Structures are given as structure tokens and as C-alpha cells.
Length: 512
Ligand code: QV4
Ligand code: CA
Image 1: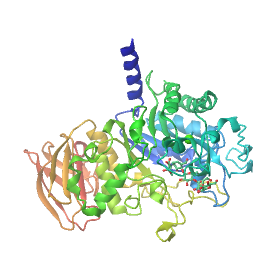
Image 2: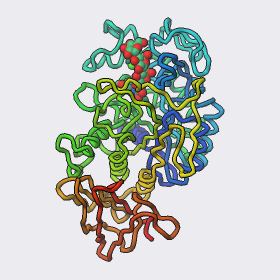
Image 3: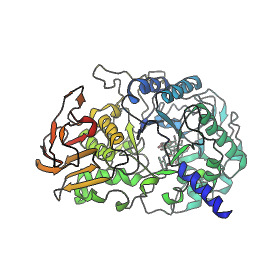
Image 4: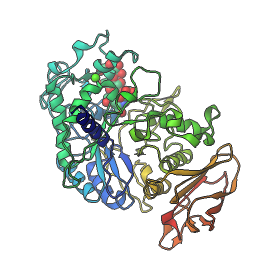
């Protein structure tokens, strides 16, 4: 009996690690702050045709509206209730988007903010995205409803009521994260409100959740709530499919709360990944690409089956959260494309690609004073649509990294090599590396200041292949470099250190 229960629990938790991708797809894109109407279009016109597996969407529920600073992106991390009207659109638009994306095989993962409500200084009134009344002063959120009973203040013993010391586990979980009213999730009532919210999203057809601020919630509380989630909607998922759960825990080492407390419940964001990869590609601290030979667990990261990985996220691309200066973003496009290319070629973890908006940075003593700026918006604060240019890039300040040829083609590469071992590692002892994924794909990267000129064993069948970084296969021709693989699997590569993108990737579907 005990054994049976153990088996059942184990099965359940492993299931929550599964992204439930459709059609053998393998990557998530975070369409940060996109409107639901634009996401629906993007699923049909771009993400499905290019093999993206799913989308992380910004929080869809009722959130505070802030004037000072003006409509910052982070107002969506201050919930007012669980009704589904947000800066990205109405419940009807959300529902239409989830349906249309599912219909073309693209999953939706919802960023859920369940640790807290708005900031204690959020005031009283109807300044919320649904226009609902609330009063942060007496912790009254009538649409849920939550009242003062549902918050943690009685269990927080810091003078400020805020988290002052990350070495004190009780503070981190029972006090307010930057002044945000902290929910008492050990109570059945609060738990049931969160579970109802998440189950409603499951009914609408979402495939899972990015759970915000998990370090600040007790794993035991999360376990109970996850256990009450429904199976996924059988309109799109096979019966018995569990929601995919990936939990935001920033664990760079050095704190008493670790990611490993959460990996039994679902996947966890591996923040060491982007921090260390940025250091390697920037060649800081004498790091070299050749050290990536044992990338993943060998670098002190959690096991691959527990990890959700990314080069940058919406916080650390603008100095929030953690990771530090090494983080690569679209602001450093050359290194960024190489690092994202490496991530998508490498088998470790479930991969998430960032898709950002541009903002006017304003550095004062190394700190960006404009880190709050929200998405491209009209003067009334409403978010602008994402216009698509004739060359397939995005306009109006939307960066759309996921549409950059090099990144999009590596998303496809990852699908093609799925399930294949990393093999045939080669390096020059410095910053030139190459590896294959079984006999289905091969990547070569030159991050040295001199040319790469090598004949390497690719593991691929003989033939001529089209490089998906400098171009791609179109019909029967190739718009980029061509690579000829001989009967012995070997091919000659020449990558100048001066090239716009000093890396080459070929896979079995780019054979000419
Ligand atoms: C301010 C003061 C407080 C004061 C409070 C009084 O700083 O000391 O007590 O006023 O009311 C915003 C402001 C912040 C303000 C707070 C409350 O930036 O200055 O406090 O609102 O009004 C995002 C932003 C935060 C933002 C928050 C809520 O990053 O700046 O706070 O949204 O709008 C840790 C966590 C990790 C977290 C990371 C950023 O362990 O979980 O910090 N990451 C997630 C999200 C992130 C989000 C939150 C958590 C909170 O990815 O985007 O924070 O939901 O590492
Ligand atoms: Ca908490």
C-alpha cells in the first residue's frame, strides 16, 4: 500500500515536469506583455508553422494600474483579483487566443502570481485592469474575496513587515516581498481561491503554469494546491495529462532556500544557466567555450529533467531579480544569438526563448533608471498591437527575438534533434567548439578572435547541407552557406571571427 502511494506520488510529480508539447515540438517563447489578439495571430501565422511548442503569457488576471511611474510593466505582478481582464485584453480575447493557439498545436503557459496581491501602498479605489474596487490599506479585495484574515502579517516578525534578510527562511516566506501583501496560503480558504483560479484557466485549455515567486511560498502549501489542479482539457490533451508546472525560484547558491526543495513538485527555473552562460560567452573570469564540454549538471546545475532554462528573462534583462551583469540580452545581439543558439542545440533542460520590447535605457551609475518602462503603448496607457514588417521583423518597439532567423531556425533544429545524445564534441582548447546531436544535427561555434578552419566529424549522412544561421533551405536551394559532408561524416568548416554570426548549424532536414 505504502509503495503504491509512493508510485502514485512519483508519477504525479514527474507528470507535472512534462510540458505536454504537441507534434514533437520542444521550446517555449515568452511573449512578454503581448496582447491576446496579437498572440492568437502569432500562433497561426508564425509560431505553429515554425514549430514553437508553447507560449508563456503575461499574468492574465485583474491587476493594479499605476500612475507613478506611468503604467510600468510590473503592475501586472500586483494582483487585485482573479477575474481575467488585464492589460493584454479581456476574458473573451484570452479564451479566443487559447483556443486558436491550441488548434494549431501551440500550448499556453500562464504566469500565475499567487504569493501576494498588490503593494501595501496600493491605495483604495477602482484603479485596476478590471475596474474593480479594492482597498490595500485594509487588505480588502472584494472580487476574490480576500480580507485581512487571508494575509500573513501576523506571522512576519520583521520591523518593516518586509523581507529584510534572505538568510531567514521564515521571513522570505511569511513577510512581504518588496511591500507586496503576502497571502496566507496555509489556509484552506486562500488555497481554494488560488486553485479555482488555476482550474478555470485549465478549463479554458492552458497547458500549464509559470508560478511566480515560489521561493516566497512554502513547498508544502504549493504541493497541496498543485494536487488539486484538474487534468488538462481533453479537447486538446490526452486524458489524464497533468498541467506543466515550472516554478520561479532564483537559486544562484548562497541562500538557505534552494531550488531542490521545489524540484519534486514540478520544474524549476535554473537561473545559474543564463548567468554562467553569459560569463562564458563574454569570456569573463577567463571562461572559455571549451569548458562547456560538461555543461548542465557538471556545472552544478539541477538535473536536466527538473530544469527550465533561458538566456535572459523579463526581470534580469533589465536588472530586476538576479543574475547580474553577465546576462546576455537583445542589446548584445551578436553574443546573444550565439548563446541562444548554443542553448537550443544543447540537450539540457526545457528551453524558453525571450521575446522583448525595447525601452529607452537611462543608466545612472550603472543602474537603469528606466527599468520600469512598460510595453509600447498609446498615450492612454493601452498596449499597442505588434505590427509585422514586410521582412517579417516586428515594428513599434517590439523586438521579437523569436523571429530572428538564427533563433527561429535553432528552435526548429531542437525539434529535429529531439531525443538524440550530444556527441562528437570537438574544441580547439579555447573558444571554438562543435558537437552533434546523434546523426541528426551539428553545430560549430567560433567565439575566438581568429578564424576557425577545421575538418570535423559531424556524424551526419553524406550530402550537402544548408546552414540555418547564415540562411536556410528554401525549396531546393540554400540562401546561406553550404556544408558538404563526406561518406565518412566529415565536413570542412571555415568561420571567420569577423562574421556577423560566427556559428554554423546544419540538420537532417536541411539536406539539399
Ligand atoms: C516599494 C519599495 C518597498 C516598499 C514598497 C511599499 O521598494 O521597499 O516596501 O514600495 O509599498 C514594485 C516596485 C517596488 C515596490 C513594489 C510594491 O518595483 O519598488 O516596492 O512594486 O509597490 C516585479 C518587479 C518588482 C515590482 C513587482 C510588483 O520586479 O520591481 O515591485 O513586480 O510590481 C526576487 C524574488 C523573485 C522576483 C524578483 C524580482 O525572489 O520572485 O525578486 N521575481 C518575480 C517576477 C517579478 C515580480 C515578482 C516576482 C513579484 O519575475 O517580475 O516583481 O511578483 O528575486
Ligand atoms: Ca509569501
